[in-house]
Length: 124
Image 1: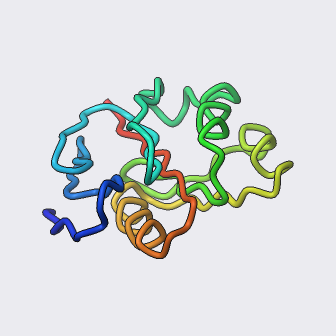
Image 2: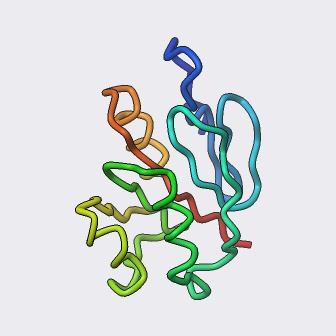
């Protein structure tokens, strides 16, 4: 699916996505990433849901979000609470949804001026 980029200035916007990729500001990424509106896209070193660890979510925590949109791949799954405990301890919301819904939700929250982080799992 192609999305049209709006005029949100220099903010990171999801401009397209598919089964095994996401485009941020028209730049294609074929591995998992963490995206926030106003910082460089970070490669997220996770290739499958089953290999998620606490350290993966610490990378997300380092972006200092107010809410995390966790794109869990092709289908909706929920990370074990021990994996996201550091986020919830700081009162940071974690919303899990399938990858494509996470891309759309990130754009909406980012456009509203929210400090959102999208942790987008692209499984190989």
